[in-house]
Image (cartoon, rainbow, N blue to C red; front, side, top):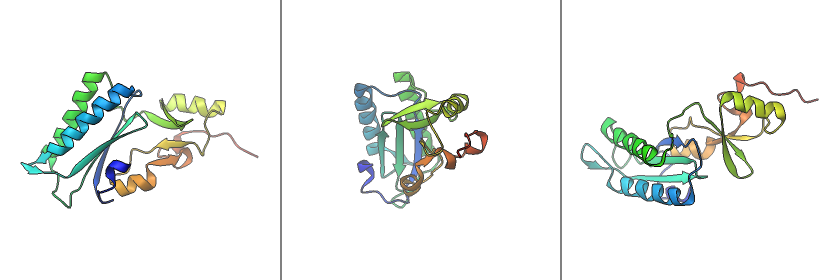
Length: 165
């Protein structure tokens, strides 16, 4: 999160979760592409103040300071196009919104809902296990709620946890 130190918490945020971990080389290359993009990012030919970061080799965060200049549809489209191009180049799906990323042993493991339920049933994860929350829309919100226990995750009502006595 050091990348975002000079940006206010009010920055608008987009998050993209990769369907697999990036290799060290891929992370370096994708990071360079993201940096180059945010340095030249514009909306209606007006420069934007943005930054991007990769977390845990799987999550791309792109933030823009709308107090500097607001981002419009064309500016957002440019960032989506970049993520689609990077996905195609590296064989990564950044747009699977049904993927659930769970923190396990300081890495992120991707699950489908069914796989996550199986992991819960086996005791590999529980209500307190942290998951990536794709819902925050600002940098400040992500700092507060970017990682939540499964019991607070939007999908929690659809999961069955074992009863503890």
